[in-house]
Image 1 (cartoon, one colour):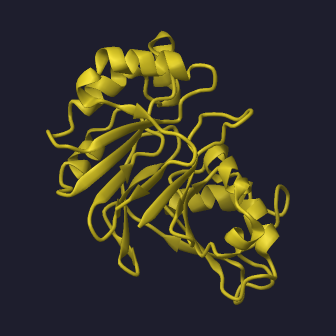
Image 2 (cartoon, rainbow, N blue to C red; image 1 turned 180 degrees about the horizontal axis):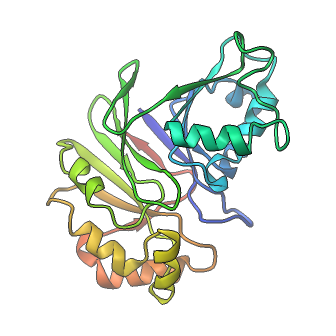
Length: 255
């Protein structure tokens, strides 16, 4: 599996793009603003979208992607999400008021958008590319994903705060090579982090200490614009043993 970072910021502006990953040529994991950098030809190849949760910075490109490729694809696009997330999208996005309901266009039997429910711990296997939802703890129903290729695994936590169940799942993965975990706020904003159920560096340190010793490489995502240097400085100061690095647009992983 080839995983390319399309966006990994907590906001927009200049080169910043919100969360999204392109997996091989046909799968998206989350669909933030970075999806808009793909060409129409690339967009037409997308057949599956896995979603961690319903917040706008993770799903905003889905409506525009569907509208763009409508009439260009012979097969539907499958949206993989929890039932709670799908219900939110149907009620607040694909409701004919904010955006057309592409799960009913041109009709329900031939719709461009097809929903497939995912459940924590249940693996979706797409030709040997395995996606397993894992627990997360956010202000809306949310999951992370364990992705497994031929040789290794990657975990993307999505948006989360402290979550023991997440680490129980991660510690069961024997071939974990990469861990991508969010840290949205600096320690100076710890109360905002707790209120919004995100992490800050001091909370991140406590979470990473739940990770059983291994050689997995740790990458930090969802840094708030203008605070990235402060957040990474605090992480490097207090979590130096984990050698955590910031995630960047265009970063490519192979598993």
